[in-house]
Amino acid sequence: MINRLVIIGVGLVGGSLALALRQSGYCREVIGVGRDRSSLQRAQALGVVDRSELDACAAVRGADMVVLATPVGAIESVCRSLRGCLDEKAILTDVGSVKGAVVEAVQAGLGMLPARFVPAHPIAGRERSGVEAATAELYQGRRVILTPLPGGDPEACESVRGMWEAAGAVVENMAVGHHDEVLAATSHLPHLLAYTLVSSLSRLDEQEEIFRYAAGGFRDFTRIASSDPVMWRDICLHNKGPILDMLKHFGRDLATLGEAIDAGDGDRLLSIFQRAKQTRDRFCD
Amino acid sequence: MINRLVIIGVGLVGGSLALALRQSGYCREVIGVGRDRSSLQRAQALGVVDRSELDACAAVRGADMVVLATPVGAIESVCRSLRGCLDEKAILTDVGSVKGAVVEAVQAGLGMLPARFVPAHPIAGRERSGVEAATAELYQGRRVILTPLPGGDPEACESVRGMWEAAGAVVENMAVGHHDEVLAATSHLPHLLAYTLVSSLSRLDEQEEIFRYAAGGFRDFTRIASSDPVMWRDICLHNKGPILDMLKHFGRDLATLGEAIDAGDGDRLLSIFQRAKQTRDRFCD
Image (tube, rainbow over all chains, first blue to last red; front, side, top):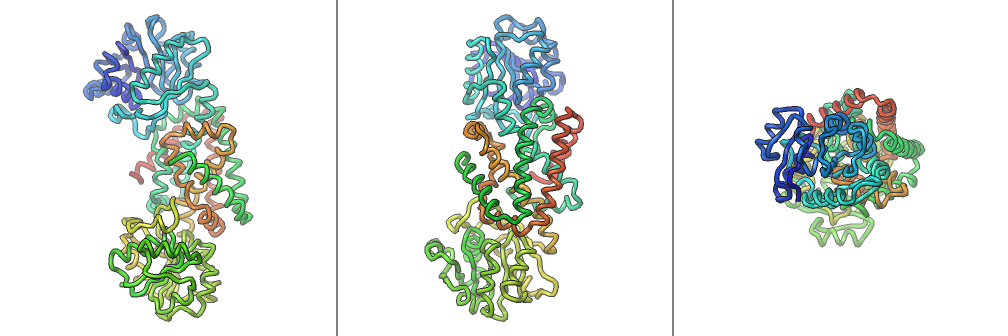
């Protein structure tokens, strides 16, 4: 149970967590923090938060759980404004899609890494954004990865796990660096391919026609290119190494495919497509 | 109205057309042709065809509409077996995803291009395959592109249009070469990216873990990698030029993205992602 929950950045991700926890009765009070007064008012009107604050330092006093739910690029400056404000018993966590950079940003912002800081990453679809898109069901059955830090407080980790489970999620632990590599492969690379594909086609002369003939498969394939550009800029800037490694790995394989097409090597093409189909059919429904 | 419809290759695509036309009462009789007796028997048991034939030449006698619905790579040999068998009034059409190569294959197989041959391409999702997956609704509201040949019979073209409209499709005309370029962009390139991504990830040491953490976006993004490998091998072999052009165009843009990430160029990244999001939001729902 959480007595006072503070969500800093009440968009889709933070707002959905607030809604889920209010609905399940897991927290007594939710305070929303943001820079944009009208967005906070909407959050309150939508019943996402009980009250809101523009001043993060004032908001977190007396809070037992503080969730950083801003874009990753804003975490350092938010943490700077939290210096000396957190209660000793307060647990600090986040929802960033990259974890190494968040740990660095929290350390740089606060000037230290609190023992009760537990980095977390809820893996949930986010093509839409903003508090209006928030729903209590967003995390139902979704995975949340915690990347607890060496020397961190195990009790804080259990509390963060309990919070996400109350929101309906399946929680697992992973090391920070490993998280960033796995996500570069499963999430960051696919998003970059979808963005590049749509951007690439939009520069062709026939773009109107091209999108007109794009069928069902294309819509599904490019859905993630409708994701929030700011969030994805930040992910690219903050998970550079693993993303560049994955791009290189993928680029080599795409070049190999091109060579097989150029050579008219049907056996090679068939074996690549069969391997992919078998793998996908095995892992996905 | 069609009196006797012959579908050569009764899989998902041909079978769904047969079902739609039987259901709408648009044809009196459907004959299925294939090489695999047990598959033809299933098609008959499922009510997809009225009767079936192993001998294509015998099957097409007396037919007013003959649909080539085999993989593109089989069209030349099928047409060779049809030499001298088609009635003078019979209309010949196909369902291939590439059109230039189909026209060449029909010409090579028959030794000439009949005036009543109308190349066609129904754009409909096909992750599953086989006659068991056939449904009368597959083409409902989907686009079918006809690529009539210079000097072809306009009446034959109208008949093929009527057939697809009876199956629920929206029919449009395009030139052969233009079709192959547009489809390379909207369909072939995305399929190759999805296949390459899944194949690429399947070779990583952490593949079990990677697919375990792949969320909703990944499933949508890679769904087309579950498509029929043989069909896609044939498409690559038969639309080589336009596909290689698109791969080159995409590869350059992906390299540019990698450079922007490497340079930490947030403005450049944001503008690529914004352009993609705007384009997709404008064209897709």
